[in-house]
Image (tube, rainbow over all chains, first blue to last red; front, side, top):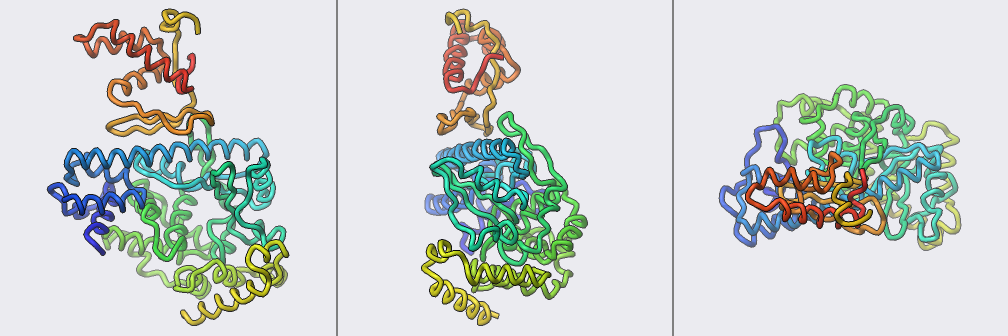
Length: 369
Length: 97
């Protein structure tokens, strides 16, 4: 880890109620080190923590550096506000169409998990829709001639039953419409109806938007950290730390919920990654639970589709079979992946190329184990 | 909204806007599609914006600010408030209360 990366993590941890080593910058950084830090901070969207660290006297900065930090922060906030408005307009359209939905991540986490929403920036708009409303949601959001979905279903109804969701592009704006938190086995095992049993209303720009309840919001952050990429996202880890150490999410209840979704290993990995990233206290109860938990066989097998070197959509899709309990579901699932619609196959180079990719992906996954 | 003088007596309030506050600025994005980026309010524009939150006229906001800045002529303060209010009304960030 470079000095700039170490400072980045220290900056991102600012505001957590823990004894944390202050950034090693009691005097202003030199220009190269400052430029490297600011570049990383902007890339990782943690400018809110940077300006707070400077204003709280934790990170020394020259006047010009402080001005640079605020310039970057204000540009980030300008983007946040445009996305927040897009979220509200999206939610309003879904409400008008009678689509049950919840706002995810981004703006609602900024407003509910942090005292000051300016501390938490984001880069997209995400909504979760109830599975039986999924297709209606997509047709509602793509009703204008300028709107389209980025990916096609392999077979009609596939995403509604088994998929994560789709990206809708409308006038150049991207809206991630989710059925589940992730693709693959953990996304299939998640009981998505549970996510609509609880909600909280968040006021954004004079509108009320429904978001996930605190428990599900925490679990979603865990899925994002644990399964969102080979390298966990810094903002998502900061959310997990914030919810555990500041907003005080009920961890026991969250673990119980995760058990029903066969996803305690997801919470475990999220806690381990977060604790390691921010060097949080090893004696905390969350860390103690994560250290002691033994994942089930399903969880171990499922996790390998997300965190191994062979991670890909194809690997996750194939691994999804493990999460299906009925033979009918398994047959329908495999059938849709093996024999997708012609339009879907054409988008991906035809059936032969698709089969080659599936076989290659499977071999890579097996080799990686 | 009538003559400029009459406008100063009409109570104004924040429209449905999206905002963020930092220690240097308040960013305000009106809830309409033609507003492609937020207005950035700095300096004395910040207390003016905040005083309109409660639904006040330009004259009332000017009078409250004049108490805070006794060395500045009240007329100049009210003119500055009126100028900002006109721009915020035009942008859709303020509406009649």
